[in-house]
Structures are given as structure tokens and as C-alpha cells.
Image (cartoon, rainbow, N blue to C red; front, side):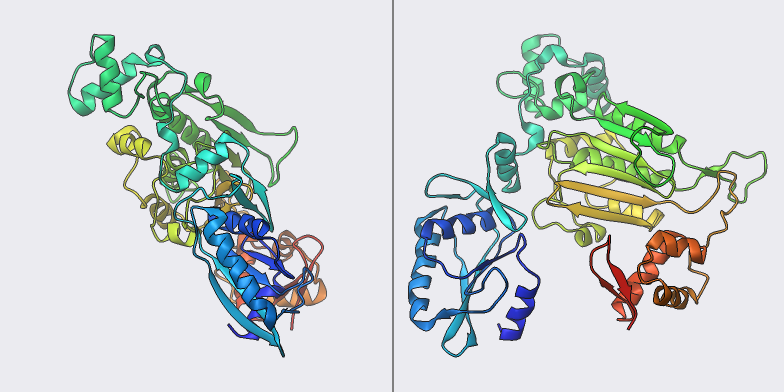
Length: 461
């Protein structure tokens, strides 16, 4: 690594992948930092850099001592041992910055010699102090999955009519008459644990009221007037519980009843078609229900605004999965039992990894946000600017005008603090169109953002 590269890294400041240390003398403190990185997504420790980002380095005479400290911490003070990489970067005559790269752990959870499990929390670290977090670490290492966890529900909670119909349709067999036989069948189908209690998959799929057993695993839907969350004003709201099949159907119905209907070239007496293809929400809702993190005790949130629809799922993307990878069709199974049953036709599931791609093909105006700090994954479906009658609102999508970029540049020269909604209003285009053009301008170097989203301003070179 060159000194210029090191400066560029340090200039970004500490975050969940970078720690700056003026010096290291405490082996236990170093081990705790390594554990936190290994239990998260890996990262770097730069030794010889102050908190203010000055590359002061360490003396050549200290390099041997620090390297021995690193080796001891990684091999003797971390369980299981890890294998960090080190690199020495010369910053001044006789001064070295030691770059310690800690890989993402493959044998999570890791803990220090005192038995403490550490996780990264922004630029800091914190102890794991709940069973939920510990289970999530085991889940990340594929040692168990949330949908196989036992619940307090016994066989009496099983919706016998629903389960009977499922057995008949998919296995062409009758429901066992004896409790012992039923218990054995449910265990063989991975729906119950050894003592006969239903696991989470069994509860979510085949009990009449899963929310009575797991009240947090529902869908909370609300339709707001305008484009912001209101404290008390709403157009439509409902909570959806029941087996996953019912939750899916009710949630989809909520979205469809709050979509605009457009004429789409049909006759005046023909029913309108939804402004966004229903297939989009089928795929996104199935994805939310079967791939959410059931170790997070929270509901799925469904928000409908005038300009967008958001589906907010508890849990960020697992392991090394990224938004770019899921757009390309990659997927990791977080709840394999649920997936195996959904694939039998309980929900419109069309194959692992294909749902996001299919939704994007039907409606490209979808953004995905993986909030790792907040442990949330959000799918945002942008709505076209149409009126319920099917007539255009008068706002352009920006695709037909080759002057939009130049108009944005001209406006920002006059109003550098203008917001995207203000630009959209002045240009009579959608906010989505403005966001796209600004993204292009930033990539081409014609526009720069200075400061935060709120309180910052635009600079036109």
C-alpha cells in the first residue's frame, strides 16, 4: 500500500470497517477489536494513526514489539484463533504505520479470552448481551436457522383442517388419527421438535393464529396522504395476522386497493389496470415473508405514500450478500424450512433468487436499501406521477427531455441549497427523474455535494 492510498483511507474516518490507533500496548484491548471485526464483516486496524487522522507512525524499534502483540492477540486471546494480515507502510523517515487486516470470520461467534463476544457498532464495538443477537451469529455461520427454533405451541395449536388439506393436496395422504402418529409426521416434516412442540415454521404455516403465539411476526400496513409519515393522519391502515398464506393475500390486497387504476388504452367501460403490475408486489411480499430475519422481534412494515410504496423487513442482508448481488439474482436461504414449503405452492414462489429480478423486469423503478446498523432491509417501489382518472399529472418522467441536466445545473447555480423536491417542482418533473439526472451529473464530475443531506449545498464546477 502506498502512503497516498493510506491517506485516502484515513481521510474517510473511522467506521464499522476501520479503527485508528496511535499505539497498541494492551493485548486484551487489541483482541477485543479483532473479535468485533471477525464477528462482523472484517476490517482494518491502523496502528500509528491518531484519532484526528494524523499519520504519525510508530518507531522502527517498536514494530517488532507490536507485531508480537498482534500475533499473541490473534492466536492466544481470541477463540477461535484468527489469522490477520499485516502490512507496514512508511509515512516519515523512520516511522511506520502498521495496517492490520482482520478477515470476516468463518467460525462465528468469536470471543476474547474472558468469554466476551464483541460486535461492531458503527465505529465502536459493543458486547453481545442478548440471546437474540447470539442466535443471529449462529445463524450467520449456518449452524442453525430461525425457522427451526422451538415455540411454546403444542400440537393442539395446529390448524388441523389447513394441515389436512395440505397433506391431501401435496402428498395425497390422510391426516393421522393418532396424536403419536401426528407428532411423528410433523417431526419428519421439520415442523416440530423432538418434544412435540411446533417450531417457528410450523407455527407460521399451519396454526390458525400465529400472532397469538408470536405476536411480533405480522405485517403492519398504513397508507399516508402525501409523501411523509404522519403522526395521526392516514388514508387506510390495517394489521395482518394469520398463517403466512393469509398474511400474504391480505397484504397484497391492501396494496392493490390503494393503487391508482389507469385506463391503459381500454374502453371507457372496461375496468382500469393497477398503475404498477401486481406481480411486483407478489414477488416483494413473498421475499419479505420468507427471507426476513425471524430472530428480530419486529413486524414487517408496509407504507404507501403518494410517490412510493415501501416494504420494510426486519434484518439486513445476510453474510456477504449486497444489493448489487440480489439485483443480479443471487440469494442466500435464511429460512430453509419456510422456503421448502412455500416452493410447494403455498405462496407464488417461482424460484430462489429470481423474485427480485422478476420484479425489476416488470417495474425497474425499485430501490433497495440494506441498513446494517438499523438491521432493516427496505424495498422502495416508486410510483408514476398519475391521477386516479388515468390522466397524467402533467409532470414528466424526465426521459423525453434532453435539457433536464442543463436545467438542473442552471437552477443549482442560482439556488445551491435547493432540495430535490424543490428542483422537481420548478422543472415540472418527478423527483425520481431529478434523482437520476443528479446521479449522472455527479458521476460525470459536473456536480458535487458539500455537507450532509440536510444543511449541505450543491457545487457546480
